[in-house]
Image (cartoon, rainbow, N blue to C red; front, side, top):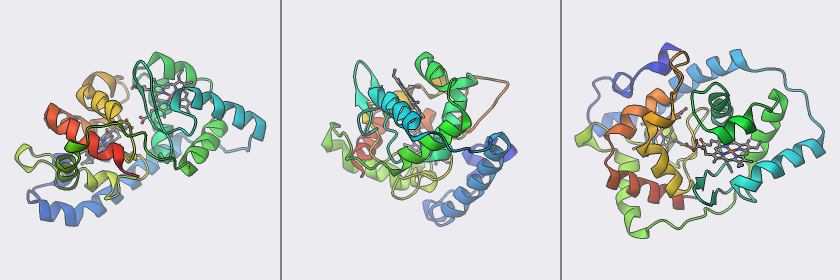
Length: 233
Ligand code: HEC
Ligand code: HEC
């Protein structure tokens, strides 16, 4: 758990130059994955298979909000893409809704009735989906967003997003996929990070890693990186 709680400054150590960070990024991601997997395993239950019909019915239910191919959906507010998302990330977020680490009344109701085997089956299904991104973000922001994703914002001590989320933004373990995510959802999360995530003081979690990063990014930087990510396949 100690690994999980380190700030990125500690993770990145004194490696200030971007060159060093990008060279070392892979091994940092690997260290985190190991730490997360260890945490996740302790809470994982056995994975009995569940009837196909039951799984399909539940999937259909998720898709009524998350989109017919889980590509995300824009209603009164943005509902995130789940297609291609990392199973470990989804499992951790479902636990976060249940444990009040992440506060959302709708997802609390959805998540707390799911059995461990249903969660395993659902996450495996979402991982296989690969619909086209919904799009709709301002295209003129994409180039600036790409630069932030690849290089971070050195002047504000923001490390490259790619160092944790992967060069292709597909994520790994508890590092979420960001590719194809709705830009307005990303903007919403990043600008409200401290209000939405890590809300249960008794259960500090992986959201702490993103907190300083979300905090340091300016609104225009958030909008740019969100636009870039939203078009990635
Ligand atoms: C009634 C609408 C609704 C239904 C049904 C629903 N969701 Fe959600 N879901 C949401 C909303 C809204 C959010 C965004 C919550 C937030 O902003 O914190 C969300 C967020 C999530 C997240 C977090 C995604 C991320 O990128 O962090 C996961 C995981 C998730 N839902 C899984 C599911 C699963 C699995 C099902 C089906 C069992 C499901 N949802 C059904 C509305 C719904
Ligand atoms: C040091 C590792 C690290 C770096 C660097 C990093 N992230 Fe993250 N990010 C994470 C982790 C871990 C999570 C999952 C947080 C949680 O569990 O709540 C996350 C979550 C997110 C989410 C929420 C995704 C969702 O589906 O709700 C967004 C958006 C995000 N990061 C964007 C970025 C952007 C943009 C950058 C670069 C400016 C960045 N991240 C850099 C580790 C990192």
